[in-house]
Image (cartoon, rainbow, N blue to C red; front, side):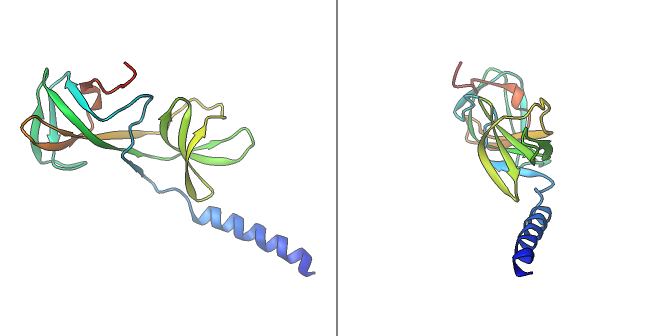
Length: 156
């Protein structure tokens, strides 16, 4: 009887632990730079961009002017985790694309990095990339208008 109960108990704990550790509703990946060769360094401003005091902030602290250079300091990718099934049938949640076919995922109640894509799904989770930039006058602020900058790709 005990031999039968132990595997059942282990199975129950595994299922319960996975169910009780879902990913957060919004996963925040601090420091992420979400594409191949993405890098924080001197960027060019390709379109005037307001910068704010904080992520989701409403207080404008400055403006990056088209043609100027700014310093990309860091960033955060805010993602709504997306449920996917691997070829093995195991479910997990997509978090942040890390480049070159690798992802950060949530599986078995924990974040796993550098997971090679082995699933067929081409959809990507909904995410917002916030970047912190420094203007030449020393003003530091945040924007999610990441398409307004050039020289973000170290590969060219």
